[in-house]
Structure formats: C-alpha cells, structure tokens
Length: 63
Image (cartoon, helix red, strand yellow):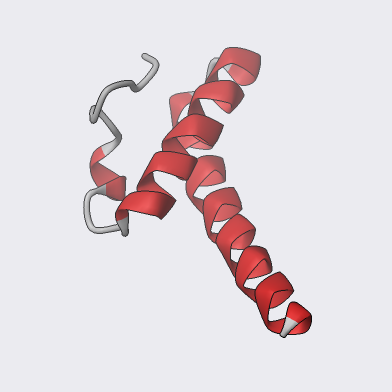
C-alpha cells in the first residue's frame, strides 16, 4: 500500500518531519519496485537518514 498525504508507516511516527517525508517518498519507490512493504519501510528510513546526514556534511564543507 503506497503512503501519501500524511499517511505513513507507524515506525516513522517519531521521526522529524523532513526525514519522515523523505523516507515516505523513498519507501513508495521501493514498494513500486519490490512490492515488499517491510523492505520499503526499512530502506526508506535508512536512506532518508543518510540523505540528510550527507546534506549536513556537505554544508559544513562549504563553510
């Protein structure tokens, strides 16, 4: 089941909004590819965290 409009997996509940939104976006793409909700949820959250960690590192390097 794809997640949209504030509907997201319960495991994303306590995540910051920007991570939750990015994780949901990634999870939906993984779900389209694999059809496996568990894999989509886990991958979405992991990749969203990596995305923002990398983004924060890039900003520090520019300063």
